[in-house]
Image 1 (cartoon, rainbow, N blue to C red):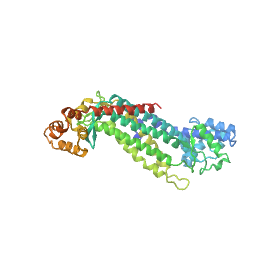
Image 2 (image 1 turned 135 degrees about the vertical axis):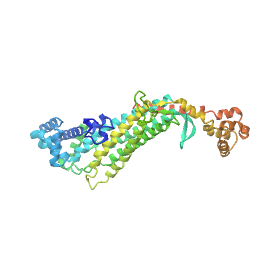
Image 3 (image 1 turned 90 degrees about the horizontal axis):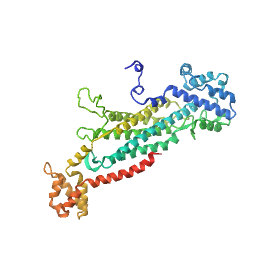
Image 4 (image 1 turned 180 degrees about the vertical axis):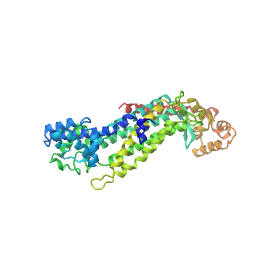
Length: 455
């Protein structure tokens, strides 16, 4: 551990998350946003005739990290034991005589909630980019392998043939749905509030709507339509639920890679730096899926955070502070880690090693078993009731033991040969039509996604 990290406590500070996302939640960035809201408040109050124009301008000039330092805010908070009051006092000092108008008519939540909306807007932009890049990467992989034969598995068992590209197209469509969800929830999430003590705006001398509209216009935000002292916590609860959904998709995709990378399957593998990367400190042959395991671990934590904002929806009367402390932890962690796992997944799928030969071997190695559905349908088309056709194929599939393959038993079975000529049996055992159907459906999915992801 270096000297710089010796005092760090949370792994989020030095191990997980991208620096540019962590920076959004830094103390300096949060102070700067609060000062920006205070400046917009003073300017809007000047427009409404509540604050002298020159004083509002002086407050605006002082509302920056050069004039208002974190050190001074911290010093004042040690005395006031109130974070927003400390900011207001520090800004008032920096504004000189004009400081008498700082925070006029406002309550603390007007500043913190509106600053939070600015913070979340940047987060939404980043998450939307993350989802776009992951969906685009998956779509490219789907297009490349639209007709690469692979056996589909249900209940962990081989099912029927399809294509690896179709598997990736399904994943891309799921990620794209999350991007749509984000676009839908963003207008509900990105709202501020400048409405005073309990949300009525009474402290603005009849100019409350005008002042709030001015602040929101300056900050390019919407106003909470029905605030109490705070913005409704259903908004953050919806965000937390959305992040939990994204995390579940991320874990699903990570688990797929981990399973397909198992030695016994070996159909895909994470990128691996053969020049220096180590899989195990003792088992030198190991090539572990460490990135997708990491994604799985982080996804579980993001999901575990989702219930907390639901609890925060329950407030005493017009507000309490029971939500405040945990939101300072939950919101940054959930967003930083969701961004982290999405960007890691994009890197995995961008460099995914796909072994089409192993996929084909698994298909061929079933010796016709994966074509049992097609055989059943062929028997039905040629005269058997579907239930009887199913029973026939089931009998052939289960009676073999260690004997001949299903394909051989099908070719030699009198009941099958009575209904199906040899060429029909061979067609029924051919996986190509199934793979072609998967490829064509992959194309249809990608055609729609291409248009959507460009927007």
